[in-house]
Image 1 (cartoon, helix red, strand yellow):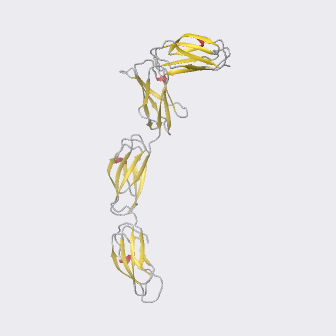
Image 2: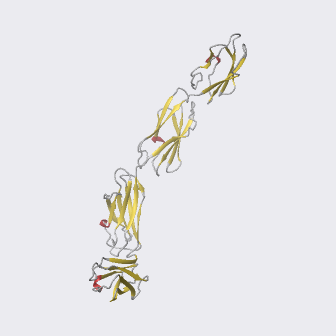
Length: 367
């Protein structure tokens, strides 16, 4: 079986006698003009000499491209079909999607814009498939009533899951000819992340926490009524962007518990899952007790300091106890620091244990 390659320069629209050499890997016979097809021009002459077929083509003046094809078994010795092409054919066209990121079950409008008026385009010229090759529904094909160069059709995204849909406009859909065009549309459910700015995990009575709902894509329709709280109040709803929405939660002025703040399912026009966030109030304080000095002579004093991680109230002297010795002189150094004096017994020796009672602080604390 013979094989071949093409040798030529680059054709120009309207060029007369454009020469193409078909170079065979052996001397062949039987190649005639009927074995060669030309798109975008006509054959003006063909001559075969030894292992080269010389082909002269008159290139059409209005074409964007030229394609020459040698048929299978054109040579008596046999050969595979082969072709060469320069440029493209027909009317230039662009295929665009109204959005390239969508939700399952939604419609996306595809628009085919030809560079000039065309005819012959129908719904059957469009096709759409999912990544696994499954056909995707196309509907509502329309030819623009005021612009013969524009055609639209809707692609219906699969009803669930996520993936990519490829929509194709077939080559030569228009009577005047056109290139094949494709556009990809990614579909996936809307997701949302619900966060708070309570970095230190400390919420006091009537304290405020800013809550942020961050979506994975632009959404609309979100408003303050879409947020609810089991306790406390919500205020200050704000749209930061099409992706980000904020609202402020204020803790109750008394009591204790856990607030659940919820962003409703399908609050966004595009749909979204329900999102929740839990906040505990008031946040119990933590406390550390230290003594200076830790080695005390009989009947001498040591200073015991209670250091809380947050401002607290309600600390009293009788919240402290000592198994030996006596306690006195409670002093509030700050809203976080309280000091008392421990006095060692007048005789004997041993180790004293000083305790601050659980929940001595109004805000709560461990023993």
